[in-house]
Image (cartoon, rainbow, N blue to C red):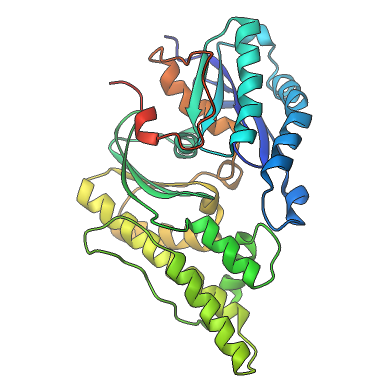
Length: 342
């Protein structure tokens, strides 16, 4: 297989409609992203039915824009990639139906792609990945430590047992009356704070790589309720800093321990929470201190986008691992099972 292929990639797993054209798995010719944040903000979170409807309204236009910006036509394409899962089933289906239609009409291979594999391979769009490497995935509904011993092969070492980091941020932000999405507000407030309300760390078992953030969220709520009962104003900035410090401490400490114990050559930060300024700064500092090579995508490649789907699909393309047209949307698609065949 040539490594100079053109993949048109489609991403509709949640509340971004995105289409990209990627050459050779590493070169972004176009990456159009239409966000629905303003639509869902008034509801305090993503409404699945509305998200699906918005994808339907915009997918065709976004495809046309992606091709135009890339300077290519449908006849230049080598394959069609699309997020198969995980994600909201209705939202996934919109992208899948569009991708299948193109695949059939153009007689091109279809590559169903894992959303988290996309977040991980967003790093390859800006730097060279070296194996074995370890990925710290911090996305909306996912918090995982993933070992990659070779190209396209994933092994989950640890995952969240309850709330993912992104979910915890949104719930705490909602309690503090911040609009959706709450993560950027918490991050900004935490970095501006001059004091900190110390929050617990859920380390779990000594050898565990798993995460748990539901207790931390409850601790924030307890601190707020205690202040209200006493008639005292609760210190928003100090609470935000305490919450974020706890999250960062656990994520960074477990990630660095996993790197040391697995012998990984690189640490990769992936997912929407990778845009968090506090996390990026802390992880960078700790990795420099420990002399661990760190890859972090630019902000535009941290949140959901189709370029990352094209980058992940490239590894299936090079092996000729294509997807049948009877592919279904799989909200619970396993990352390990999606791995390329050795």
